[in-house]
Image 1: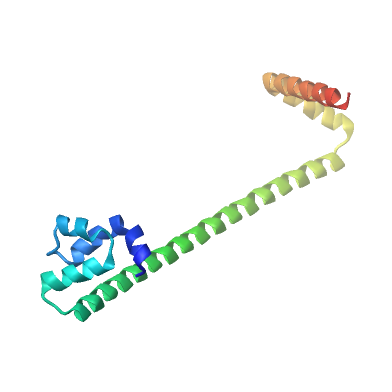
Image 2: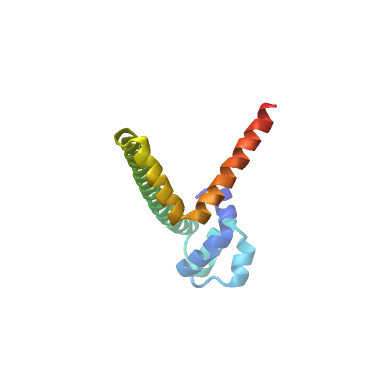
Length: 151
């Protein structure tokens, strides 16, 4: 593990280091402060091993930690990909539903005569008078706004 990465992730790593080397105290962790050489020296001192053994142990633990982080990252990538696929499928379904609605409206306009459409419109107005009034006011407002933009 790179010295900069160790220093940057020091707070996150402290819990992991504590589980790996239980003989290290909170004061030891404060003194180490994210410096790999200090960690190696303390491991050597507290566990009575050579400097090379301490370095190998630290490097081994950090490489395991990085692998675990890589697995976590690949899992996150897979979940992100799955989320994107689900969103794309839902979007395709929505586009398909809109296209079906447009097709239905198009066939309605082709198949019905004006008298039938007028009767259907009267039925809608009787069934939903308030909504039709609100829709009418909204359309009127949009027409007035479009005229003011042309001027």
